[in-house]
Image (cartoon, rainbow, N blue to C red):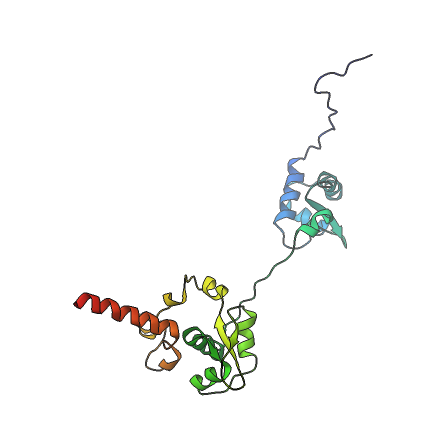
Length: 218
């Protein structure tokens, strides 16, 4: 019985690409739109059979992650159909929050837990359409139980996603209205100060500061 030689691997003939075919490859790769034969021919340095070269490149890319395809007599590189399910187009659409949404968020942040009526009372105006819902869709605000008063209205609080988005460890890391003004982030002469700094956590923060001052003077 004949023995197989070690490393007995069948070698398929390698497809060699000429300089002109490399030029075509580069032109197609760099183009953001499919190209016809005439356009490709006008860009290469030496006249060759363009269609034959494209067919050769098409075979070369047949079993790769990207394929060379011809649609309506125009050529372009496309992701292989076998891999298309791995790729998805993601688009981030940035939208600015309305002033009402920003003020509502600030009130909830600095006064939580707070009811819808309390937010409206502090702002001095009724809620706009979907103002609170937008903040909840962002997962920055969520219901935080009901207030123990007649009607038991829902109270709203901020979420861990809110802290994460604004790179905060805890709510007491939030700046006061004076700190925001000093940093040039708000105009303290025109902002309604009742929006900021009267929440439970802020009072606790103020108490801690006063406690430190008392210790210093003792």
